[in-house]
Amino acid sequence: MSGIGAEGRKARENGGERFVKTSDPGSDAPALKEAVAAAKAPLGPANDAIGAGGVLKDAAFDLEFIDKRGYRWSGAFKCHAITYKERIDIGLIRSRLSGGVPVHLLDVNTANLLEMLSHLAVAIDEGPSWAKDLEKLHDPSVVIAIYEEVVAHEERFHGARPGPAGTPDDARRESGDGEGGPAEDG
Image (tube, rainbow, N blue to C red; front, top):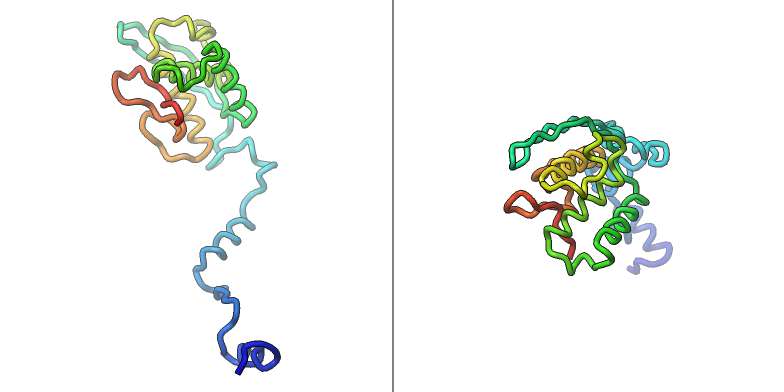
């Protein structure tokens, strides 16, 4: 007997095998679970400024940091989780700070510091007067400490699991002397 036409349809309807198999609505089918989750998810446009678990895009933190020379750096900062456009701005600032030298031609410490400085230039909204021109500081560990606080907030906003030193997946720190920052891509 052919599976085509009226006879085939009757055979399939009477317990025969279907041409296209579907999951039972009561089963734990992954596609069904994803569809239900998508239908229950809040709308993105209305909630874009709210992060995972209700974390707001704006945050404040107090820095208390002692550098290698024994000097204390303290102050109140306000920052925000960056937008897609601001990610582009960070790349443009990094390019300007590097004098147009491609990032892959820079040593890893320079590339990392440029990434942190450009990220902070966009993400920091308020801070102490000494932090207005981070490029002029002598100890890069101060910049790293501020950057780690900002990135930790962005991870909370996006719902990322805590990683080493609070860095995002696309900006893992180099291990070593503690003066690294985000590793260069590629």
